Length: 204
Length: 274
Picture 1: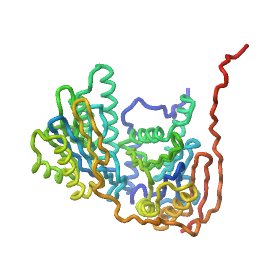
Picture 2: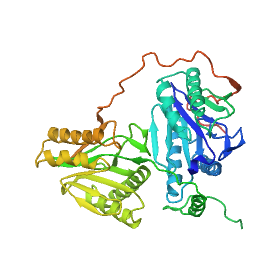
Picture 3: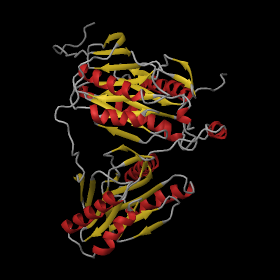
Picture 4: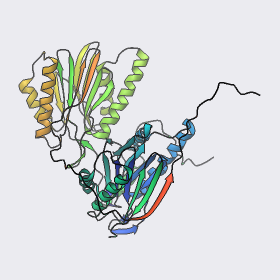
């Protein structure tokens, strides 16, 4: 069994018109046993940048704490929030530093940059950035997510339609993956508000 | 005096503190993760006025295509570009690092960078990590001494060639070059040959695919033709797209309004009066 299949996870982010959505499943397991059904995989770095981490849960939490620390230092020095592109470079550098003994997680970063332009990217566990203009996926359900997103994604969707699309893509993909699921957690971010929703999914 | 658990940004280089824990997990039977590789076909050739570099745009994670349109031609200096094959994080990190070193060197010497400088910096780094930094590169550029093209292997060995190919599609591309290359190609002939070689990699090698990127470097000028050719467009686009009539069931909604961004404009120009 791969190290990424120890806890199980599914994270996806999509771009819409002047908005983005990032979604994850809620299961935390130890191989085939489920330990928790409300695990937080997506965390806020600041109002306009979110990071979703899939992979080994202990590294997810450690990496998140380190990133919040570095962002707070940045805020104290620069007196402003980090742009999403800068934050992605920071995460990439922190992951590559551990090239020969890596953090066993794959981040998905989503944010609103200058002029409210949405930005998404994902990385492998050693920091190889993969920028995309439409959607990015990560986790044990990633192969199903690739398929679902390719089929369901349309460019320039508004916030409500984007929410529907990302939720349907997430729920249908985790239904085909034993290790992720138990509901969904979706954040849709527009320039004026952040809508956080918890989805009802199959609990098996 | 606090016990330093503080993660102060270190001075640089790799840190090996997670290796013991990762080895323990592997011994327990959990397989190590696979990294993003750029399966790849990368090529370079020297034509009469300079150098042309070409690359495909597929990034793979095992058998899955992770990125359909990634950039494999990296900037090193205004007159030097480098294509990378192998582990994606390694090629990006190594080219970024040497690009920064070249810039500092330019500030210090006040001269344009030479291709041989980039070559030496790259090969020294790769050799010192004995091939564990898995980056296979095709480095090309035009400097004061003329056009140069080099290949660099992950263990640190280099070759200087008039035409070169690297990556999983290198055999497919090399067959095109060996058949059709000649000295003194014009710009258009060179671009056509490079595009043909990359297409041969895209269609015959499973690790390469999607589009063709080309970079033409001549004395004092460079042209980066991103997605020069797109021989694999999507052939089955559904005109209606998906529309979901039945809505997703939501258990809980929380709306957080973001702070309004306020524009501060100065009115008048009076200084503060005591």
